[in-house]
Amino acid sequence: MDSQLGTYLKKLRKSHNYTQEYVASYIDVIRQSYSHYETGRVTPGIETLNKLANLYHVPLDEMLALQLDNAGSTNSYCISLSHISPRELELLNAFRSLSERDQQDILDFLRIKSSRR
Image (cartoon, rainbow, N blue to C red; front, side, top):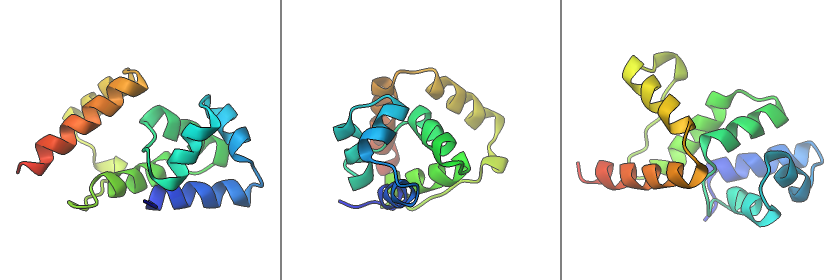
């Protein structure tokens, strides 16, 4: 169940000589949850991706692109943050204000809706 994002997170962690426990503590999740991010079993939310981008000093849009590649593996789409419309920005800001569980519900809903095209 490997994912591009998961592989990238594992590579970053190892290149910084961090343990999964350390990274999990930094982003305020349990180690098992972080492990699921690396294996691709679970996709981290935007807030978590932002924390990881800060930890590793990488651009958030790089992680978002990998996350979108994972989410859209059957649709394979990617965005550039410089091309976000005002409507998309409104959606992103509203999404960020949600809990991680609510964010996951929204993502699941969007996957269902987009697969019906």
